[in-house]
Image (cartoon, rainbow, N blue to C red; front, side, top):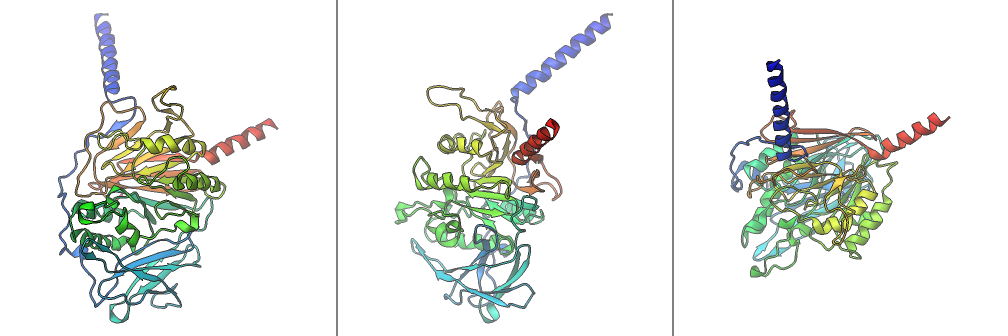
Length: 471
């Protein structure tokens, strides 16, 4: 009898301990205790082979592609020639070494302090067929170079597709690990969340030199599949002490976006469609309050989303709206106050952001009922709200943001400060797999993996079942 009493008391104490332990961590999810390997957090030396200049006089370098239209039947191919402008022509075709088609682009350069860039080429290749492998050739004579890319499947609610998500990459050895792991993931297009080269951490001419090295660094992936660009704070490059006061100067010269195809008047915000996804890119560091150009454009773009064709609605930005890290906490409040109600109303599926050098995934929550004078001031569960995912752990020289707020907020489902990347696998109109992969793991191991049900089609299926049952 006494033993049974003691056992019951022990059981109650154990339950109380578990409850208190749970409360300490928040009623949210998991704060990972994984301890990462200590790798160098400094940039790869310029003479390293991964930053090597290609052989040949005036050989094209820093080759990359991005989507060139709204629906995935065009690509914009960009590259740099160092010695002279040369040709801006792209030869391409569907058979290796056989180039039946050609397109001519534009070339320009720019200065930054005393640095003068190479000749930056942008060439639109359009009229492509879906789900087709194209080979392309750029450059002249013996210095020409050849690459290939695969166009996405047609716009269709059941077109499967895998996106890679990378943010705050930089050009350190950790960055290289992230890029190499991503290239083994099966991703077909990179959604890049801003903070590209971290060249602004250098001074004078070295700013431009480190933009060039980063272009060569990512070429191993970016020359073969589209990278969809968004800009971060490290692209602003406001440096009045050296006479450079035009924000995003280097970024806008080097990186093309298909903003005109989505009726945007600015390359920093735009939209594309790929497979079963409608992707909207926003600019955290451009005006976005009511009646500004970005606000007006987003209002209209959300109305153009057709969930019957693209059931998955994805938004990219640099500054996270929901973030429980000490780093950059609540920096996204201005955009949340303006846009969160729209995100909920339109049932955005995922919002990906960078900026914080860690990984974090939220539950579906919103704070749309709060204002400065009334309402509940904490985020609450909301099935119509997006999942907010921070993927700012690409590997740059600033290192990781390892100080999370304690206790873990109720809106936070999983968080960890390690280098890595994410993938989003859209299986069909109803299911998607979100994975986060830390660099220390092998390519098949996911540190965080979740299956999501598409709310638009799931709700339609439920309504159809109800109607059928009524009969």
